Amino acid sequence: MQTYKEALEKLKQGPWHEFLATQSDLDAIVEQIDNEAHSKTIFPSPNNVFRVFETQPEDIKVIILGQDPYYNIGQANGLAFSVDDNVTTPRSLKNIFNELKSDLGVVRTNPNLTNWHKQGVFLLNTALTVPEKEPNAHKKLWKRFTDDLLVYLTKVNPDILYIMWGGNAKEHGQHIEQELNCNDNILYSSHPSPLSARHSFFGSKPFSWANTQLKRQEKSPIDWA
Image 1: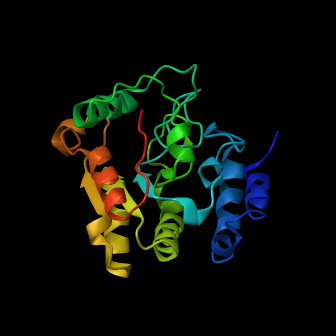
Image 2: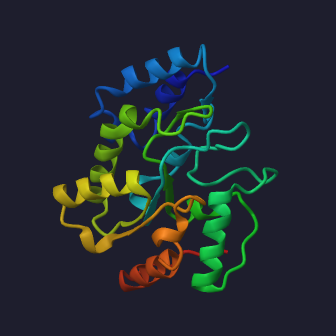
């Protein structure tokens, strides 16, 4: 079975090598996760942990930033909020689809968000890993990496759009606002989880906001269907 270290070494061979070369702590992070995996189940699997990076940095149009991966068996697939075709739609994703219908009139039932990813939507969690049933356990482990990643992506593409869902995402958003003048490209709301969606997620219209911004940038909008 592949280890998280082996997954990282494979990632280093691809288009993200420039950014990864700046991350001196990353080898120690994945080593710690590999050690933890001896006694705990970690999600997603090493095969999927860096799946969101299966794209070119310059091709990213929109970043949707969540919290951490799903922490139940059979859910996390490496793309934030997405699950595979044969998996029951998680409650957070159901709320996302409810807002999509309210916002654009789009009815979606397929919980696999790969088609969003292929269109330039970077489905990122603030932490790339989570132990089973331990939400936020790896938040501090990944915080610097995620901060650096978002700053790097904004420098690569100053027009990149951010949809920030939840408190963890807001922390990272405030960091890049301090580092770079990009606050006009950021939309904040509460997380779509059942515990917080009613606060400011419902009615935030993130999908129409993103497409309006993309049209202003003379870029093709996202087909969210």
